[in-house]
Amino acid sequence: MTRKAAYQILDWLTEAGVSDITLEHCCSDEERFSQIDVNTSSLAELREIVSKINTPLKTCALNMVFGVGNENADILLLGEAPGAEEDRLGIPFVGQSGQLLDKILASVGLDRTKVYITNILPWRPPGNRTPTNQEIELFRPYVLRHISLLNPKVVVCLGGTAAKALLQTSQGIMQLRGKWTTADGVSAKILPTFHPAYLLRSPSQKREVWLDFLTVTAGI
Ligand code: URA
Image 1 (cartoon, protein in one colour):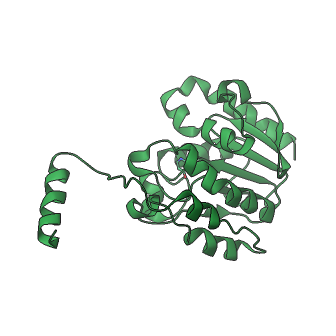
Image 2 (cartoon, rainbow, N blue to C red):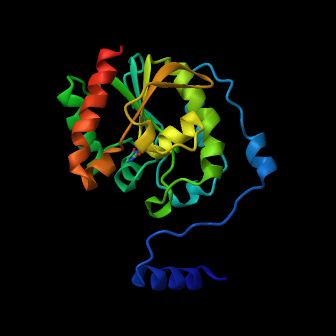
């Protein structure tokens, strides 16, 4: 296909309202799992390795979103995956959810200089879809390494996807929320809570999240 023909098809799709295209596959399972090399001794090295992971997510995303904040913090916040704003800027939680997260942090005397923030996936899934089990499985070893390099006292899982990925449980966030727990390969205590995006849709749950963050600050 010529470049001109490809652009014509893209133009047509854009006019038809398509904003993201998912490529089905880019490498075999064998290739994917052979990529796992998490024996890094620094965050900079881990960032470099993660940037080279072969995944179709990279073909749709603009920027890798690795992590931000205080690398010596006692509290690590673990989200799901970047959204459109995060993808544009390469920084986690800078969109609407991030603004709400900042308010939640402020309500318990915290801010971004006192916590570290990262996500299960470092690239935005097309159309903000939920990460697939395969994607979670691919990135989990890197998330575990990310956490162990930072060595926080507490990991707060923001939402069901982060909680399920870290805890490897089939329990939903409604059961997990607000209860201290642990996970294989993580020395920090873990507290799952609701995702800020859920609070934007269900503001009546804000109190529960505030209570969870009070539990976190009391637990460090
Ligand atoms: N939602 C997430 O889970 N992570 C982000 O970085 C932004 C929105």
